[in-house]
Length: 239
Image (cartoon, rainbow, N blue to C red; front, side):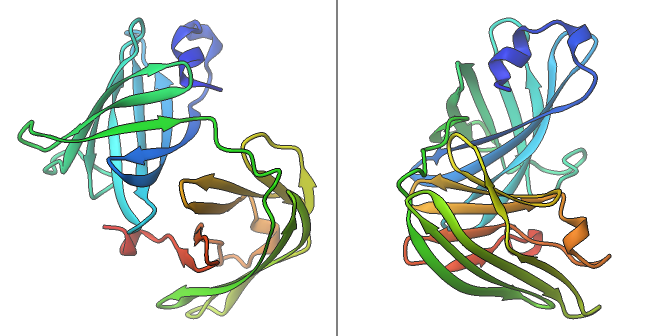
């Protein structure tokens, strides 16, 4: 659901936090923005989340507020999910119009750093074709992906990860494609995998995959460039 609609709906309609994913540009850099919005009794929206710059895998965490009427949004950013008591690294100030969030990123001292624009509507991948094989890892975590897509149709997927310390693994060997606007979605039981385009990069992420994983295993999101080179997104790599 778009944040614009969230801001206009009555308080009684909300029993839980809404999550939004937006793709766009932070200055000249492609980035993914993930926000969790919940309404407080005063009528404003409390927002928390993060953005990830896909070229460098830089991750910054966000928290702030959005006004209920004119949709003015201010989000403080930092290097830790807990921003209270820590020095901010910047601030995103902007407004929502339709599905678009645009504005300016400021330095801690208030100097303008760069413009940004994010949108909930991702490009269609109905013409996307690829035959990817890539290995990625960091420390004790390793991941292997084999993905074949022909003109937006899934041909095969085999995605595996292993956590060296415990030996626990995740294995997705086959999935069914589901309808999705602005990307591709594949399902293996309750496990849902999404592929989206952001600038010159693809974002591959999995959720609700406990049936395919050992108790200590998981599937980290992957950033894939046009050459098929994959990198995993981990907190210790994106500070």
